[in-house]
Image (tube, rainbow, N blue to C red; front, top):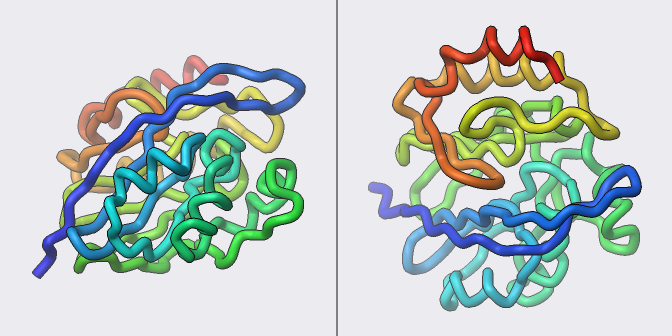
Length: 210
């Protein structure tokens, strides 16, 4: 029986790509119980994440994608905890721009399952915001962690390098909006939403384009 829960913290820093830098607040999600946990997106502040873990054994640092604001604290967190950093290989070029001297420890792959505290995290490859974007679906918790693929109000940004609007719309249509409507969408930035709340707006996003 699962005893898993979701803990959440917000960290602040910057996002840089294509010659620009922006101030951002990131959601860091921790899935686990009192003994063990997985961190989804080690953003900005390894000390704050370690404090939120509170001595629990960290099984993995999972990166939904390799934009620097989602992985900048990953090596420090891995060093502090001994946990491996996991990333989809299609985002390795982006990763290397931020951490050229520190490779990820393992690969995320579509259909693979990570288990923590009895909770299964199903990996769903959702390219578009970046080539190696991955969402993590936890049926037992009725939630999906979408990184920057799907937000309250629409898809993640696709106006910069390594991104593509038709690809992200297809990822959302085929891989996320097919989940149960009550599934809570826990995003990389900002407020959570549900699959059911976002599904009706798909055609609007397509018509608007990016």
